[in-house]
Image 1 (cartoon, rainbow, N blue to C red):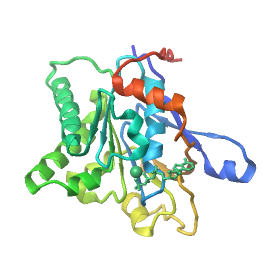
Image 2 (image 1 turned 60 degrees about the vertical axis):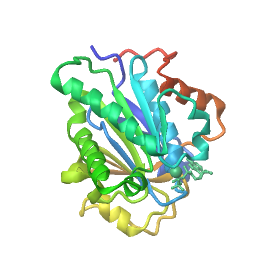
Image 3 (image 1 turned 135 degrees about the horizontal axis):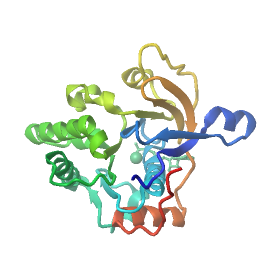
Image 4 (image 1 turned 90 degrees about the vertical axis):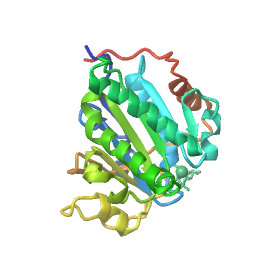
Length: 256
Ligand SMILES: Nc1ncnc2c1ncn2[C@@H]1O[C@H](COP(=O)(O)OP(=O)(O)OP(=O)(O)O)[C@@H](O)[C@H]1O
Ligand SMILES: [Mg+2]
């Protein structure tokens, strides 16, 4: 039996907050929405929201879950995480991906019958791809594509952040497997056009601040979201460290 909650609050409703100062949760269903894509221009709050995402998923999955973090840029706000066992920086991001990919294959081959959640959190994925030679670039993209296509039933998730999530860096149309797509900040039209279905046109006159934007669930449900700020919050960094060191001190909530 699963030991964790499927529903996880990932932020609050932007409109309710700005109109009535009321905090209404925006939740995702982890059973359906296994992979998350966070995009937006530089400074829109992508990396900060990744920290919050790790915390929320860790609270949901907790015991026995495995979190692996690939930090291509080595952002200052991830400094407290650099000594963690499962933190990989710059060129070592390829090792983070390989660990997760191999674990997924052991499950696929039936060698590993467990289905405890494995989460690969990847910051600046597109910049990482651009830094690679052609052969390695193709290998990396193909592994990411496979995780996107096969991860759901094998309980292997991707939480990936990049500025422009162009379809070309997600081979074979695998980008459609992101059940959660978030665009933060006042993005340019071309970013919305890339990820939103044609029938959901986005009004680019909205002036979102950092950590605010839109969230698209299962390619149909579009909401406006606001992430809480987590920088300089020591306790929250401690939780991220626990997640990335694989030391769970938090009891998983029994499923209702
Ligand atoms: N949820 C938030 N609420 C308020 N301010 C935020 C929030 N998230 C981020 N910010 C502010 O925006 C700044 C930029 O955030 P962050 O570094 O996460 O952006 P980014 O999209 O990752 O940028 P880059 O692409 O350059 O790495 C932060 O230093 C912080 O001051
Ligand atoms: Mg960043």
